[in-house]
Amino acid sequence: MVQRVVPSNASTSCSPPSWSWTAVADLIRLRNQSGTWLLMWPSLWALILANQGRPPLWLVCVFALGSFVMRSLGVVINDVADRDFDKHVARTSHRPLAAGRLTLGHALVVALGLALIAAGLVSTLNWLTICLSPIALFLASIYPFCKRWIHMPQAVLGVAFGWGAIMAWAASRATIDPQAWWLLGATTCWAIAYDTIYALQDREDDQRIGVKSSALLFGPRVPLAVGLFLTGMMGCLLAAGYLSGLGMGYYLMLALLGGIFLGQVRRLRFPIAPHAAFGMFYQHVYVGAAILIALWIGTPGTTP
Image 1 (cartoon, rainbow, N blue to C red):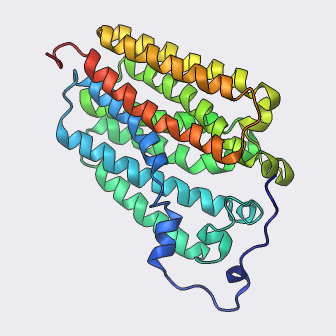
Image 2 (image 1 turned 120 degrees about the vertical axis):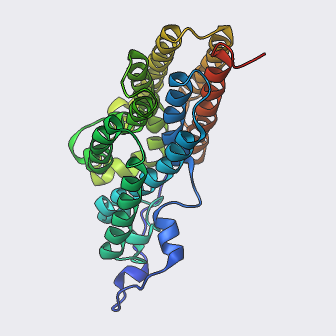
């Protein structure tokens, strides 16, 4: 059982904390980039599909760097929104704002700097992508507050992550074809599934402090819910592949991933420790990479 924690003494210090690059690195989760990968994969999926397996290198670089910047901005906004909640959750009590290592002003300066970098990256893209970018910022900004309003905030996270696929498609073709919307649907279902698994780590604390999550919403039906959303993800990916005329290699890779998903759902039928839940969540970083490889293999003309 997760134990209650007492806020760090740093938060009760009389003198305000000074700038610390170590604390800033912790604020943006520099040592843990799983979120960056999960945000980046849908964008790269779209770049592969929209460019017949050969996306321009500069677009890959823009969206890779943009994923790092936007994920960093997202976690800063999250920590600002949750700075009072985080003090009472064992897993998050040592975050810089919760522990008093940085002030709210420090975090807002970091957020502004990241937003300016993101704007600079978007300015290199076409007008359609620029027009779509405020939606990405809006989604990143409201997600941390959704856990107060709705019982499945993971759905908002999924749309936020999937919007990268819409922008990448628009940046490639200056239009949005049906395949891009199917990738958005796949990402939304995927994020609900893996973030429900992630939320299992904090289920007791979230219930105690009144934070909403899909892990609490589904309760004992978590295995069924995760299985259904992963099935929805696979259906969306199949539709995107069919519309793009992908080859058999793509579908064989999806079948392999289906077996992995089935194993996860079976594991969720039994009690799971927080560290095991995180391990299952982290497997989805590799799932995203496998889908990228599958898209490339399945694109006609990219393999001998």
